[in-house]
Length: 70
Image (cartoon, rainbow, N blue to C red; front, side, top):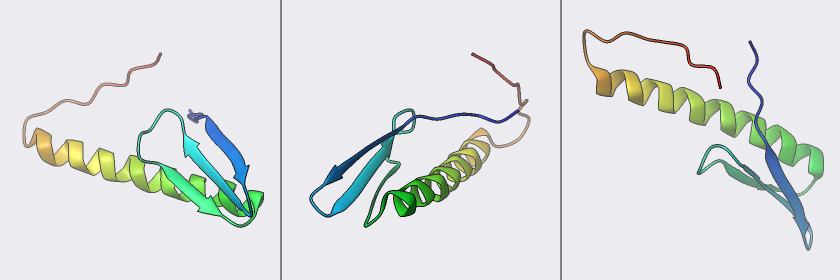
């Protein structure tokens, strides 16, 4: 299953800026639209992996993983 996220993108002067709506802190600024989209994708993947590792460390031992679909 592939998750989908919403990028909020706009041009400000000579820069393209964007945020991932569903994940606070995932934002980027690039010179071109395509560079921005690529940067958002990379940053989103890194944030999700960091959050996953952080959750596993916080859980310690004896946890159970459950998939939740909304």
